[in-house]
Amino acid sequence: MARAATLIENRLPAARQLIQLLFANTGRALTIGITGAPGVGKSTLVSQLVSAWRLASRKVGVLAVDPSSPYTRGAILGDRVRMQQHHQDPGVFIRSVATRGRLGGIAESTIELDLLLDAAGFEVILIETVGVGQDEIDVSQMADLTLLVLAPGFGDDVQAIKAGILEVADIFVINKADQPGAERLEQDLRAMQSLATPAAGTEQRQSPICRVAATEGTGVANLVALIEETHRGVSPVRTRQAAWESRLKELVAARVIDLLGPSAIVERAEKVVAGQLDPFLAADELLDLLMQNETVRGRPSHHDAPSDRAE
Image (tube, rainbow, N blue to C red; front, side, top):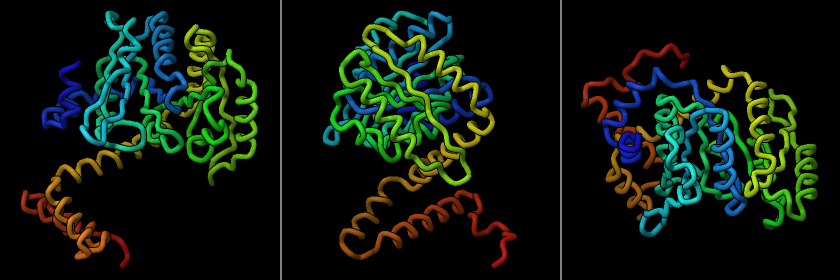
């Protein structure tokens, strides 16, 4: 598992072949995204959730995403330190993953690593995001359920739950609920939910709120029950299709960048900086270059394919 994960993170050709071979065995795991600001106790909560599901004899995989340094490109990968109690359990696999500069709270290889764990028979997969704040919503596009973890006393509580992140949370988890301010935080959450406007074509929904104290394990069993109840209430076909629409966009974008190569992108960026190209023309040139490369390799470009669109 560890060697396969390394292949995937290093974006080696063998990794793609491996995922293609394993894909028929995927689609059975419950993938849960866990997001929230730094310091709210996500790692501690993840460790408690692992313990709860292991008591139920379910195999659990954890992808803990850590930020990479913008200078050295390195990452501490320290979440495993907080979960040492599980390191000898063969029913638990924990992998720390560096973002390598990717924004949105997850790593570039998260989709493939999730598929690897799924194919390996892990029944629950927990993806703990970096914890960058309000725009950390990418995990919601690939997880079956998204938990937004909050805690009282972390700055402006309403600021932490406004636009974007509020809409993607399937369950709100108030951690450190034994501390002052938990009641106020729940009231703020409910007020924000009552003011939210549903997107066109969707129904108004109120995501449930669960209080826990992860360091003591208080409320974790209730949270597990709520997660499973919420998941049962979601259409699995609709959820999987929506998830794969987002995943395919990610995979196509990554594939295009791989095919172009960094030098082509750097060359256009230099011209944009020098004022020789505008960014839109630079993007068009890159797309043209991509189609030329594919034609040279013997694959017809999309422009060569017949079209039934009305001109």
